Length: 292
Image 1 (tube, rainbow, N blue to C red):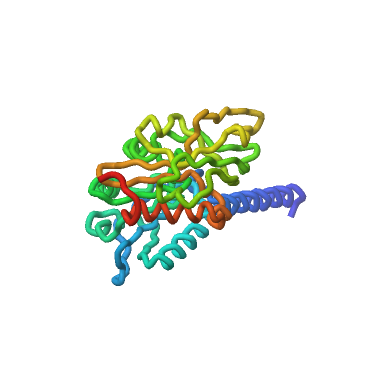
Image 2: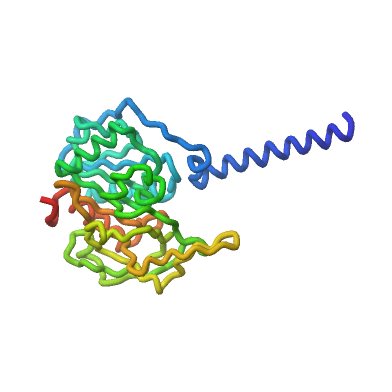
């Protein structure tokens, strides 16, 4: 083999190794679907447990966008612990075909646990909307409010109240002060008036208050750096008034969104554990009032 051929072969092997390592890296960090767009929608629904009792919660973790792998695992463990302790039924799936009327009627509330991307077909979206309007509950966690949902106008308008703009970068994760604005809600009544939390802080182009949402918790922007600083660019993410957990109504349906929960460690903090348990209890109409 000539020297030139050996050099070319070496370069070819190096390229293959680099590409393979890059693809593995995309999988590991959860960014595969950001590069290779996935708009798949399941048509065959999962089989529900025969022993599914009430109250029952559906935890949906499908990710056709960024996949928060660590947070999904940690959050599922937390939800299962809460359900077992409270004697609730819980069913977790990534199969979007569960969103049909005859299956959703088995649940009191649905959790979009870091679910992202184009998750549901138009028929599945319609079934979810009917479920809420008829009195079902919804809890959205972190990525449920990111930019991957922006093509679903109804979802953005009725559940989030604004389009996601960006999250903090440089640094990405920062400790900040959270302030409870409404201590009478089941999701917040066990929380201190304020506490410190480390998060990837989200911002939106509109304030959910302007869409009639009831803000439960806000973040003090003076306690962290609300900027994207990346590759020499700077983007100001300040909202001034910066809600981070809020509730609303869709018909008779109760909705609660929390932007907290990117890292698995968040689900081990006593404050977030209490918030999630109260959120489920309220969305499932087991505690509190609203949307009647």
